[in-house]
Picture: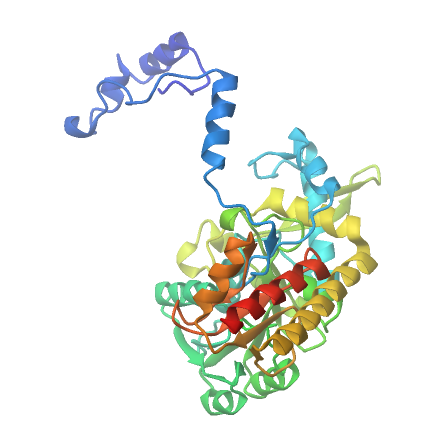
Length: 441
């Protein structure tokens, strides 16, 4: 009965009379009087469009906008082609409505189908769902779908992004799965420790490639160990890295997950993002959410429909491996447009620029006096210094540069750096010059 209900007062009264009530107060008679809103919301007076724009500009001016960014750790600053925002701005595609009625939802359904197809091409997997909320949710859902009656334990690498590990831990607590963290050793998953943790109760093994510290894991060996113990193998991957690295399918993964944010979505203070999920054909019926399929109508014309979704997610919830019933369709549209715009060669070029610039920066920082932790990496790497990380990062901030992520608090000396195609050689050289000044003091 609020202001935004799309019907008139007369229509509201007619509906009330139909159910034998005289007023909206009678409709909410079971709500305790002390919690009812009596005098309306305590809100300021409305503003004109110019006043709203001015007010929003004043709020936005409080943000610190860095001209140069060298921080990743799960959210990455990549170039977003103008076509992405142009297509996303089409109001006919901006809807929260689930496209159950195929006859009026062909545009949205086709965009999801194309997104799924591209995720399969990117990961090498057989089937993809229509996306979930973010990379952390995708990883946790992947762990849940691997659960079996006699296999109720998940082994997750300590080198997974901490936020993702927290989400997995929450899911496991909620569905009574046992979670054990595989220790890290020298910045990567300890394969020897993993070997000793595998038994016939393990449902799955999950690693991140590249891992949280930017390092490349021995994904082939870890996958073989998991399968030898008859456990499923889950890989959480950076989608941009797949422009130059082997796909999860090539490593033998059963499920591939990750965050789609690098594929055309701005960092945007942490969201909205989307989580992508893809699996082998043998596991497609366990995928959460929904899958859009391509078909033909009675006249032989191509059409798109919601093809596969587990009934348990809606009506037999206690038997479901997942209760997710939604998807990030607008974000998935952005990813689809981004990948269509770049194409395979464009994605490879973005990946090559990321990794080549990161390796150049690592070499220059080593010359400047930082110690670069050893190991193969894609576009993130860790350094150590003889001074607290805070001194280096504060000096960079004064120059309008957001440096890497401090890994051990303000007094620690380890920093996780990241380069993307957005960082120029001039930007990198400026960071190196500032660090030289700090270390010389």
